[in-house]
Length: 558
Picture 1 (cartoon, rainbow, N blue to C red):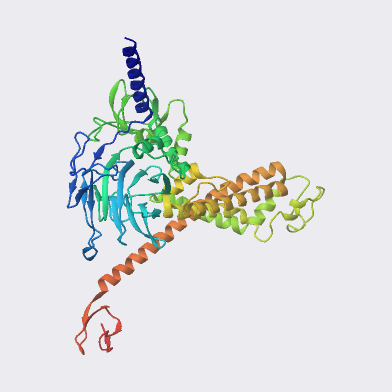
Picture 2 (tube, helix red, strand yellow):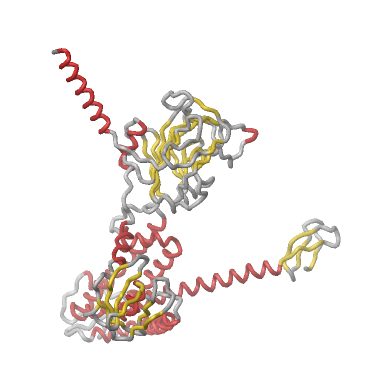
């Protein structure tokens, strides 16, 4: 009886130990799992079967007989476009913004590029390859326009790999055994199928996840502790501001809100498909939001309980919240669209600003002298310029620097620099410029890993320093109150110069594009095939030009 009690106690302890060990391993939920043990079956219910072309079964990474698939490369028939295994899984960013792929791979070096797991043959897709870099064949990861992320040299042994993509944060992480490699990545949507391409080696246990695995989950799959560059594994939320902006937009109109129409009226529709306009709310009338629908639509009531449908953009454009100001609504809406260069009124406004900027620059010193007369007891220019001595205020080091006499209109350059920065940044990388000014700017240059970041940082710091200079100058030469007035006027002037610079650069870009288009069109239309009458050789040339035959050298007119 005593021995039975001891056996029962030992059994309970063993069971508890097994449960504790199992609980310590995080559970992963793959959307596809291909063991590749002699076939292409997907062990996840409902998943399609992978198509395997050739290959042979070999022992897996853990020694299981016929547990992996091996391929070989015939150097004489090397084809970089080979598809040895095609998985029925779309791994494009559009399908899976967040993606993790894990596998066991054993590759042998044949001194040729090999595609381990990818959805594209070039760097613009997603995938892992082996290619030559720094004189050695290394593991590499496709990073789109950010190039390639290279890891360690190839070694002929089984290795565990985990490939992680985060499209929203433009990041990639590559884990090889116990090491982490990190980079930025901007991938395009390429082929919709994941495949194993040209490979001299074996693949085993391919798993695909629609989320980013944690360190614990990766270690549970590989059986290895990650020790190298562990801090690089976490992907920081760089673009969280986009979600906040989206939520602010979604919550800009709430159920129960009452709006007063303003301007040309607001269209009410009978359905959410813009089929028929059933009412046009006149200026000054009100409407109430009854319910919030999808895709930016709202059900509203108007005119003694009548109901219909209106869009968020239409409500915000043509109405303002009850208790608000019609003037502020119109001003804020027009101001938010002031940089719309597709509207003629924006160009007219910029033309007026350009004239004002020209006059201000030309008469800047005169305007400054007029403004400084408002300061009692001191006039920097009373003796005919900036060299006059203060009447009673003791000079200090700033008084020796300001005002700037060589280019007195330099404060206007703040708007010019800002206009150039926005224009160049928009053409260079709008996405990164948006991130920089919403979340990325720091006085200390931290977290910048692209050339566009350094351009924006340099131009922004130059603009800030220039602005601080004329702010200090305003207080030095004009005192506190007149100085504030001067600063206020310079802010308005710099806003104008900002707009004029931006639109001027847009105009230059349009002209250049038109000229290039005409040049290409002229060459396309004017060029043709001609045959030399002397040697009979055919060649291409532009119409109406004097050329030499590439065959015999004879001078010809086309």
